[in-house]
Structures are given as C-alpha cells and as structure tokens.
Length: 149
Image 1 (cartoon, one colour):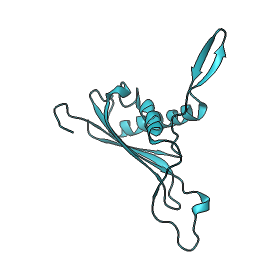
Image 2: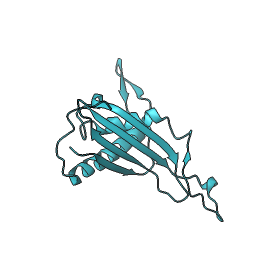
Image 3: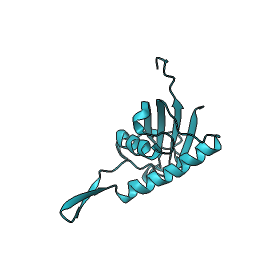
Image 4: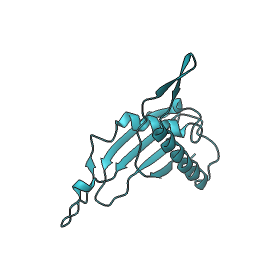
C-alpha cells in the first residue's frame, strides 16, 4: 500500500486521562467526551482519506506514522501592522505523547488492526501563523520487513 496523507481539520485534542464512576459495587472507566468526540471525527477523516486513495484494507504489517499538530494562533498574538507569518513551537496544548495516543487509538480498526503495529513514530506541534487554520496532518506508510529504517 502506498503512503497515505490525512488532514484532520480543527483543534487537535490530546488523549485525556480515563475517568471513573461507581457502578454498583464496582468501578467503570470511560473516555472523556472531548477525547471520544475528537477520535470519532479523526476516524471519519481517516476512512475518507483511505477510500479516496483507493484502499479498502487495513495495514497488515509494521507501520510508520508521522504527524504534525498545528494549533490556532491566540488572539493575543495577533499583529495588525506586521502579521505573524511563521509557526512557533508550543509548550502548551497537551503533551506530544498524549496527542500520539489519541491519534493511534483513532487509527485502530480504521487504518491498522492494532496500534501495536506502529513501529516508527514522529511528531511535532506548533502554534500556527496568524490566520492559519488548526489541524492535524498525518503521514502513514508501511515499513518493509527487511529494511533498516
């Protein structure tokens, strides 16, 4: 299968900690609504991109996933005379590993059978340039079994 590029518009949401509620004598764990909704949106975009690329099957072997998260430029950083035209690294907006967790969970069952297939990852997170829309861009490709990547 050839490499796949997927764009998920909107504010990227990192995977939140699971929440717990009492259920009778036990405890039930659940995913917070914000994370659950973002993953559902991401799955729709992943399925659409896979279909448009002509793919119908899930990746079967080891997979490499690279992503770039772009967050909206805060209104406090807007400039009237000289608009901020470059991206800036961000320390806020969630940890990079939590962004990856949400992304890999969303891809399970849509792009790959299990997120354990992901053998190589890379990611960056940025605050976008002034007026740049927020979103997440993902590049997925199969890793050849005999390569030294």
